[in-house]
Length: 259
Image (cartoon, rainbow, N blue to C red; front, side):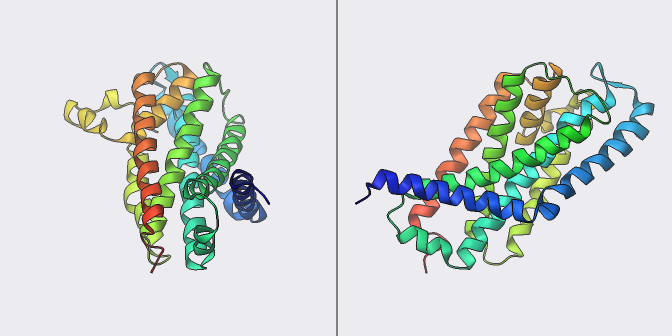
C-alpha cells in the first residue's frame, strides 16, 4: 500500500504534467500569440517611437521597455493559465474528485500554480528570444532576473486560482484581467520611468505592486531601476504569502466548490 507521501507526490506530478500538456497541445493559441504581440510592441514602441524618445534612465528606449514587455507576457500567461484551468476543473467536477482523494489541498494548489508558472516562463522565454532580433539583451544579474520572474509567475498563478474559486461562469474569469490586471500592468512602468511623472502620480505609482515586479526584473537585466531590488523582493514575497494563504484557506473551506 502506498504511503500518503508517495500518493501526494504522484498527484503533484500528474497535475503538473496535465497542465503542461494542456497548454502545449494548443501552443499556437497559448504560446505564439504573446510573442506576436511582443513583436508589435517592440516594432511600434521600441523601433518607431523609440528612435524619437532616445534614452530612458540612461538606456536606449528599446532596452528599457524590453524587460517590461517580457514581464507583461509572463504575468498575463501565468495568470490566464491557472484561472482557466482551475475553473475548468471546477466546472467539469474534476476538482471535486481531487478534493475527496487522499491528496493534500496544498498539493493540488501547488500543482495548478506550477502549471501556470511553466506556461508563464515558456512564453517569457519565447518573448526574450524574439527581443534579440531588436536589441542585445544584457543580463547584468542572472540570479536576480530568474528569481524575480519565477516569483512573479508564482504570484499571478496563485492569483488566477483565487479568481477562479470565486468565479461562477466563464465570463467571471475575464473581469479581473480586463479591469484590474491590464491597467496595473500598463501603469507599472513598462513604457516609462516613474521619475518622469509629477510628484503626485509618482507617489501614487508606489501602491501598484506590478511596478515592483517590473522594476525588479529590469534591475536584473539592465542593472538599474526606479525601485530598490530589496523592496521588489519584499513586495513580491508578501503578496505570495498573502494570496497563497487565501487560496489555501478557500480550498480548505470549499468556498465556491462544495455545494
